[in-house]
Image 1 (spheres, rainbow, N blue to C red):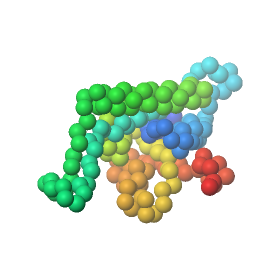
Image 2 (tube, helix red, strand yellow; image 1 turned 90 degrees about the horizontal axis):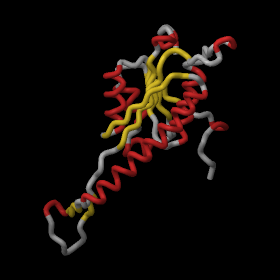
Image 3 (cartoon, rainbow, N blue to C red; image 1 turned 90 degrees about the vertical axis):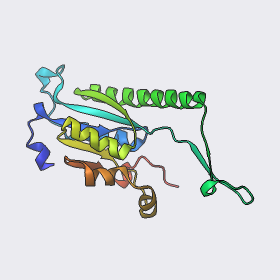
Length: 188
């Protein structure tokens, strides 16, 4: 946090990766409370903090359905690929747009309540790559991502957006992980 504190707050550009998870909203709230903690004085209550938070939402691209073939069915490479109709693709895209709208609307409201100027960015692609690319193109001072707390095995097979960003983003990355008592997950 020392490096980000050297950037004057009025020039500070922070990007927060947002999806529909509780962890991303927790990360946003943490950033609002800690990165922009120097709030307005009581005389300036109606003025916004200086600096900008960019809320980025990445929509994964539509993938065709891939099914392994069973015994007795002969196809190239043993896989059947089923392509979706244009109606299914349109429905998927509309659903993704609606989800992005809901997520970013809620996030913008949180920023407004904390009087922090915010802007939104919606992109399509692999979240890991697109978040890092957007942070680099916008030259942000800090990238904030939430942590879902994936186990070692899941993280090894699926990868982790936060781990990827920590290794490949061209700016400081803050991974916000809730403490166990603040964890948004319900214990089994």
